[in-house]
Length: 240
Length: 221
Image (cartoon, rainbow over all chains, first blue to last red; front, top):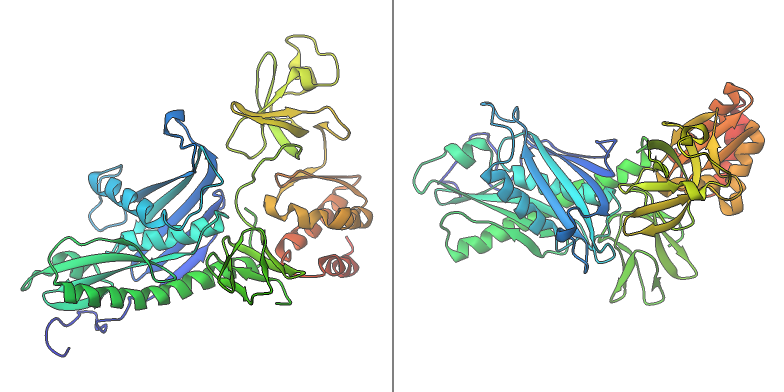
């Protein structure tokens, strides 16, 4: 793909942003926590519970509930964003819940809830994916039974060219030709999709290509998540 | 698989038809898969995971250490590091208490060793009837992750007795990870505290009791 869109930061079309960093146990007061950074985007996830669900009418007597809260800090972007819940953050909270629900096993915790708080402390596109990556590690760290980990990445279509892991410019400022479309995808390690979003137009052939690209990238992210989790124990971790 | 190893959810621990899935693991075809973050261990072909992180899950019969955080006319609320309230009823105190004089038995922010005798719909019920239970004074309190408590106690109390002998301290380990160290001298207490920290930092190693013995050899006071 010599012609078409050329990336401003000199990355290849299938190259992730760097640095990619992950750290586990960053919030001492939480039952489990993790940080995930990709490029300039940083997400921190903290897990609390399982604990009794309140109010009582939201309890599920069959299995535990996963409750995610996504929040962008007011200082996370260049122009301060209004703090507090918004339409966007409520939606992403729900999306995160759906992305994680297939892997957590809360059957043993009826009437209980696991709270996941995701805070974006620095945003440069791809925040929901960073949030999901951090949340997966934080849930594991909190000792929540899980089938496996999930990893998330966004793929974008810039005009007609497919690129991996959009940055702020590619996500919201690029307007040439067909403009930009971004497709966040979450994979389990075994290769199943737990979440895919698409706002825009793409041909079904290209969508297949998108899924392939995302799979390759998620394998890389999985290795980073795995390493971070293992490292958190070996390095004589601080008390929690 | 000979050694213990850290596994993450979804990781294949071992593969082979001779292995059986134990706690926190499942069998998929020939492979034993981890369902939890922790230490994988194999014993007589049974593969299980020892949890090492996460919140304290209260169980009936657990002896825990907590702080008095609220008082009513009929008992005390204790903070035992659980999301639910832990209530110590006046009727569970093995002595006569005058009405309205609860603070003479236990006052706000005092520390209590208590036992969970029921986990009901309304919360956790505590008791201080029993040996070694009741208000504690003096010494120091440290906190560790509750999943590491079994390592601190050791097989049949071997580890905790080792620390007690080497530091001349009295140590009470709550199942919720709160530990009370009481010795004659502060130096002894600090010594015991460092020993416990050594255990929590090296909990994943095998033959830990021997390593702690060595540690005491090299760290006198």
